Length: 129
Image 1 (cartoon, rainbow, N blue to C red):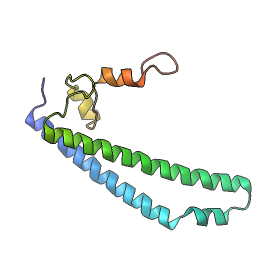
Image 2: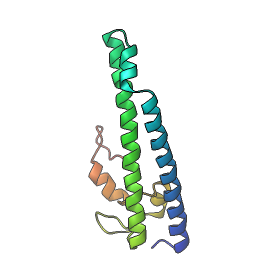
Image 3: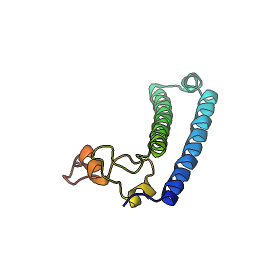
């Protein structure tokens, strides 16, 4: 069953709201990283163990920013699909994505079956969700 206009409007609102939050989080993280640069952290360390921790903290901070940017791109792509009229259709098989899935993951581009197939089984042999 295709998404109603009201469902599309609600999902678009969710996507736009999440986009704004992520943009703000990335902006804040980048501003914070300017205030706590690696050079400052490295200058404060006194041994190799402390230096390793400083390196790890910088890596984690960058990984979080990368993750937020990836989600921003997914949301942009979902909004493009919405404007093009293909939102809610699986990009792999072309079938409709369940409304329940879109409610929980508005940027989802694949139906649950195609997503499970893409991810493959986990280490215990059961499909990941």
